[in-house]
Image (tube, rainbow, N blue to C red; front, side):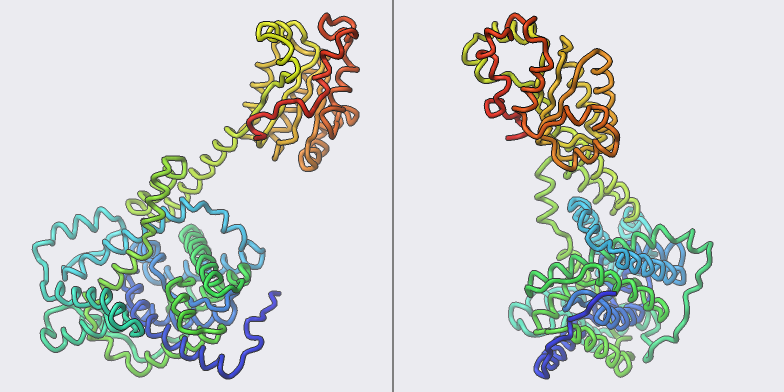
Length: 578
């Protein structure tokens, strides 16, 4: 179905570079996988399983040469909400359903549609997710015990405030060590895997100096099994589908957006071009298979994909080697993970939250003080204080309403008074001329004539034609869109005008507008002989229809004065055309 040329032309040297890149990414992926799983309300090993299976399957079936998939911070709020409300088993079902949705999106070539989601919405919920991730690690950073994970932001903040006097200073010290490692190691030793060091260094300090004073993976989760889980199909029933389709859809949409954004970033870094529909298929397969091994939903990870590229990756083999490396680490060293303090993971996730916060883009859109600013703020607040599902729905709805409003405001309908008449008469004479010569009116129309602007168009034309001219010419050169509602309103105008004995002439309409007129029957009602490709022809035709001998200003003797009517080159361009 999708041609895959990502493996063509590889040499042995390329494979070696992929092995090195895979090992490097694997080192980064291990602490992140565990941290994201814990923050999502599940055991750390589930993040490891996700890294192994999702990373492997996306590398095999995806549409990007360098994509690295696995658990990501963007999923934390929605996954935690599902776990708290439905439990871990139903999270697996939701992930499986999301995989089916992603697969179908790819098969039916929806890859390009996701790019139409407004940036104000994506920045809004991404910044909101960053706030949730950061705030969710305050408890681990401070070593606060007996905190129950709550679904809502304000509930978690209230809990932290209530337990703030029980700060564990050993945990704070452990977290600070990790934070300093993340900040300063890249500056001093750029090639050292900073996240692994930020995990190992505070763990070593805690084990040597205060082994029983801080909560660890072992004390909180019972350690990590030294094996893969057994294969098990999710328990899917019609009731669970009805119950979980909505959060599953949000997982699918968020996964699709994150994956394609990551693929676009990798394209920009390497000069390659990904296949968006194939990428969705790969993500769908990964999210369908991963729950069968206990893994949580996964998507393309921008930071790990960038690390993969910077490490010298050449092909998708780097993603395969990453999964194999993480599997080997799991089988050989899983028991050692029991000693990792939860406080050492807090600064890792806090830095991840800071990096994904998009604070510069957030501030930029906010300063615009436009409809996009409103969409941004509403989406952000709903993500933080309600949930991601509601935020995305309301954000998209507001964005659509804002877009429709802007498009309706673009519509311009302007009556044209010829330049030559302005040059040869005074303003008073112009007013007299326009009010005493009701035979022909010429209007330029520019913008989108669609459902959001159709009533505005009809009201402007109706209000402007005070003296009911015999001929009404509509220059539609700059009408970009004519939808069914716009055609219906134009049809009503034509009908009313014809009932009064008048004629409407259409000038310079583009092929799409004419096609809509034909399909709607409007072209037949106006009459093909009243449709012109040039305004000059339209005006000449209109003048032929008018009984010019009965007009004191447009008499035959004065036609030289009135020739401005048939000079399309002299007709002022409306503001919409400029």
